[in-house]
Image 1 (cartoon, one colour):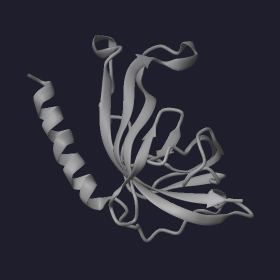
Image 2 (tube, helix red, strand yellow; image 1 turned 90 degrees about the vertical axis):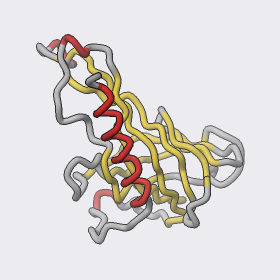
Image 3 (cartoon, rainbow, N blue to C red; image 1 turned 45 degrees about the vertical axis):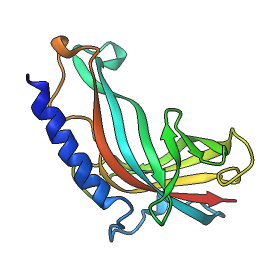
Amino acid sequence: MTQRPIIACHGLLALLLSACASAPIDTPVPANLVPAGEKAIGRVAARGVQIYECRAKAGGAVGTEWAFVAPEAELLDTAGQPAGKHYAGPHWEALDGSKIVGTVKARADAPLAGAIPWLLLSTRSVGSDGRFAKVSSVQRLNTIGGAAPAAGCDAGTLGRSTRVPYTADYVLFSA
């Protein structure tokens, strides 16, 4: 019974977020998120969820916390058409089978409360030739939602996962 309102709330949030996908925020990109010597070659919007699990605190600390597990999102091109998917790794996979995996290089707090941070990730190709094959860096910008739940977890919810709706823009760069 207690999960129904949460699911309904997440559903409403997902609907609101989907309307905002790829809506630019008038906030300058922090300098630490700009890849030196690379040029932007594309942009995709993500609409999906950030998955968290209630786990024992890391490093032997007492208590529990929401731990990030993975993203799960649909990627849309600038016309709003399906362009691929974003999932654990983190991976970005285009419809043509090209795929990249990223490593976080830099981060900045999102300008909106409750939004996941903006990121710069270095990437490498792990798929076939195609749209994402030449991507060397990805910026995650214009994030809305996706932050770990504000309500803490406890021993009673240990092991339970939650899916938090989010949208973001991913700017693709090549060397």
